[in-house]
Length: 111
Length: 111
DNA sequence: GTTATTCATCGTATATTTGCGATGGACTAA
DNA sequence: TTAGTCCATCGCAAATATACGATGAATAAC
Image (cartoon, rainbow over the protein chains, first blue to last red):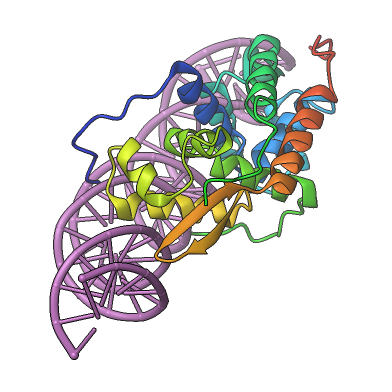
């Protein structure tokens, strides 16, 4: 794809928040995160039972969540247990909260 | 693309939150939203001056934000003024806040 | 060793996203 | 009418995302 010639500068927060938002941008990933956060299940195998998708697809979504740092995996051979990454979860919470609550006055008088 | 055969059920909140997250998943859209939220600018033309991207690209991103309901446009011929949509902004804020704060105990003992 | 289980990764197909320049519609101003 | 401004949309190209089945690595159980 053609990329912008002049490089656009983003803040670290913008980059991080965008990457977390991307991880949250698919409903099945929201569902997976919720299942892990509520301890309804922990293992990939349990997820594949609860979610009617191919195991490879679930694994792919887990990889995306790992990439955003929102979850972490621990090997319990031959299983893998996934859990919420509390630090990144908190970071996400704070980032979004700040972003939405920093500005409250939306009355526009520039017209 | 091949779609899942058995349809997956998502809650309304999951669908809405995912669509908002998708709108937030690109740093330039976070930047645009922030510029609008802080009243640093309101018109497409101002955005194209502040952001080194083609006007058509900016317009496309604005369309994505419109689609998620996060902004609204008003025509001031020949300009268009964009503003934050306060209702959807609040809804987004609440959705993310609830999602992140509903579950706090991440200690996993299912291993 | 052999077999079974679990899950990541590969390969593939299709859909969507992201960027650009070009074009055209809508309106204003002259 | 003509010219100019502003911006949405089109058409294209490339990158990324999303789904699947097949395969293979790692380990446990026998």
